[in-house]
Image (cartoon, rainbow, N blue to C red; front, side, top):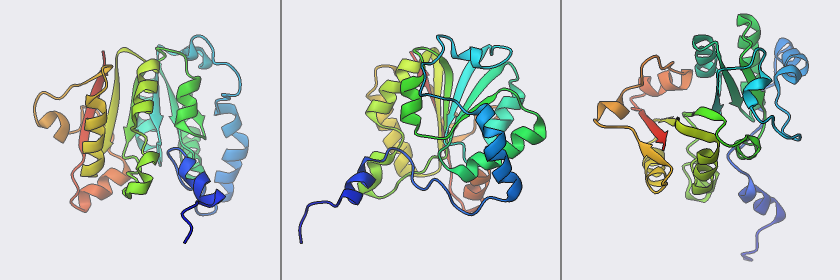
Length: 236
């Protein structure tokens, strides 16, 4: 059998950090939100970013945070409601997740969230230097098969990209219930000169940080006996 890969296989290898973009059919109201509300909240990274991205919010935000792969949006929505003067960007290529958070934004009249339905690597490249106070990655897809590890968000190149956009003193926060991906993340972050792990005792990574909003996936993992790690890394 030939070892040459098909064009489809090579394209699959080159995909970044996500898989399917759409799952079950959207309900009518969800489809309406994607068509009518999303364009008002979506970031356009085809144009140059503002020197101060906090100005995309009205009024301008005091700080800017990014959540990559927000899933159903529970954590992102809770954070946006808790920190009304902070601007939040949610990145999610999965359209069903985008529809879910749009429904929550509409129902709660949330004005401090902007959305990006694409590849987080492209978003990080677009953001100006030192623009984020925090980046959250909550229960990401672990891509457990070795041939898919390159799709994991935590990579050396991504860490370097995060170091460029997270300001000194800012944080990268990572939550995961898959031991292998936690070990992977600790190993990759440990070799970065730009971040330091904030854990001083076991409870610092065994327990959620104060005011953490448990996601639907996180509750499911707990019911099934999987323990999550809550990792915080400070940008030095």
